Image 1 (cartoon, helix red, strand yellow):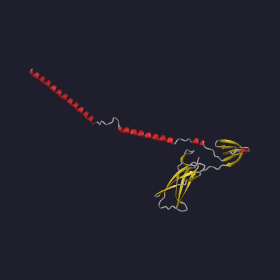
Image 2 (cartoon, helix red, strand yellow; image 1 turned 90 degrees about the horizontal axis):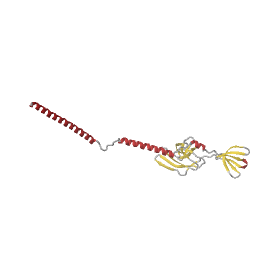
Image 3 (cartoon, rainbow, N blue to C red; image 1 turned 120 degrees about the vertical axis):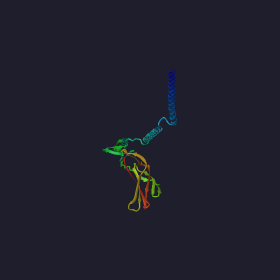
Length: 252
């Protein structure tokens, strides 16, 4: 009987000690797990953002670039407004071929489009007029208006080694706009032919032609255009003298 009690007591003590070891092991595991979490949290940099900073900066840069392009496009529209070429055609002035002097001293400029023994119909800038011939003193032909361009007196000349630069102005003293005005320089070694020829367009008024072409090389009557021509003349070339001229075209 005593042996039975002894065995039961031994089994109870053994089970308690085993449970203590299991609980202790679980506690150690929990401590190790908590320690690992603390270590991982310590490894985190407190300055690290919650979002990808580099991607955000790239997005902002792209937005700034888009805004810049939109501003440039808006400014270009302000400085270069759309021009209706059809409207320009409607505003075209008629050619004036005749000058009619009346007995009152009035001078009418226009083009005679029809006439009979007593009357004439004249097309003017303000419309058609019917004029009684008995009041007409004289009829003259109007010389067609043409451009006439000349150099201004002072032309600046610069030289740097073999580079020769000429800076000056051109004036239109004629009665019509000159288009695509260009200055041409000829460099001569003898009297036969120029050995070097160089040219440049002037910079003046911006003009929109009926075909939609835009040019800044037109000069209106009484106005000026600037030019700057740079020509390379090799040292081996012996220039005797230089001549220059102005050429232009006429367009509507």
